[in-house]
Amino acid sequence: MLDANLNSMTVMGINAETGTEKQLSSRRWFRVGQIAWMPDESGLVIVGTSQSWITYQLWYLSYPAGHAQQISNDLNDYGRVSLNRGRQKTGHDTTQPVE
Image (cartoon, rainbow, N blue to C red; front, side, top):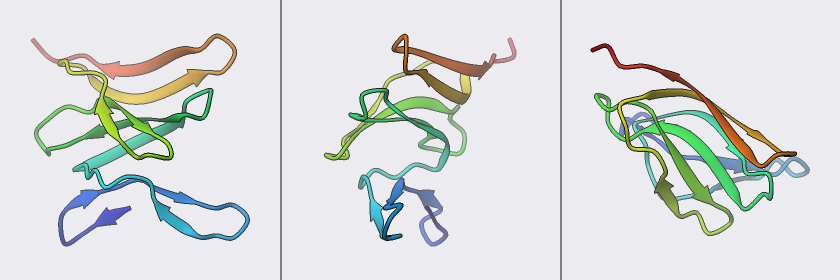
């Protein structure tokens, strides 16, 4: 969900049966890209950036506690994340930095 006043985003969950919205974490990002559930549903992997000038990195958001932890910290600019439920393997697309 984008907060135009703060120019930041947070992650929201929506109950499919009732339509009730719930903020999943107090953590705010400058932008959030793709989000994927962990295969065991213990949390989410998020592609996001904390500042406009920082590349998109991978974050883990525990569920239901809502603790956010950055799990990548490199020069790659992550675009998408996919989680393979059968092999417990994480894949991602990156944009390599120009050298």
